[in-house]
Amino acid sequence: MVEHQDETRAAYDGVVELYASMFADRLETQPFSRNMIGIFAELVRGTGNLRAADVGCGPGHLTAMLHDLGLDAFGLDLSPAMVDHARQARPALQFDEARMEALPVEDGALGGVLAHYSMIHTPPGELPSLLAEQARVLAPGGLLLASFFATDGPEPVRFDHKVTPAYSWPADRFAELLDRAGFVTFARLLHDPASERGFLDAHLLARLG
Image 1 (cartoon, helix red, strand yellow):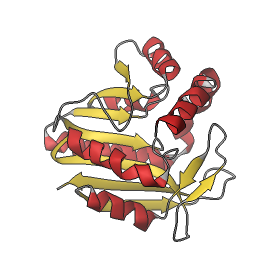
Image 2 (tube, helix red, strand yellow; image 1 turned 180 degrees about the horizontal axis):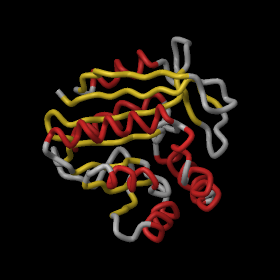
Image 3 (tube, rainbow, N blue to C red; image 1 turned 45 degrees about the vertical axis):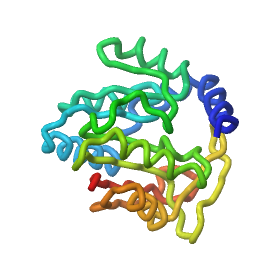
């Protein structure tokens, strides 16, 4: 696990300014993603626990969106350069460096976790530990919105992401992993890709049982 995380960290540390400029207003052209995040925020507000983590927050644009939607949101990211950028760009919000399998959050503390394409670089065999960690930090009834690239095939597919290698997942297989981690997947959205890669974009909304 450490080796691929070191590679991912170094890759994202090297593209901070470019990545931030590309994704600053990305959701303006992605209505499906934007509205799924809005639904997620509404449901988290409904739990009464407004504390929410943007896990794999990158430059912090979605952390800010969650804050604007009424959540007590903070961002966590593996890349120290991304965290530094997010802190400078949005000094009123909290951003910290963290590994996804060891989040610096107390058990059952959160009403929501947003994982927006932040688990795509995780090798398939290591994904269950990340989902278990997200379950750990959520209060019972807490919400997880996981977004990722989806494939129609039966197995995850490794591909050359522009930053560092990544994986696309069959939505059913990903939902099975969520179920095993203690989540109940109650909504899913699959839609045509917004990129040339050809994968579907997938959003799974799940509640901790």
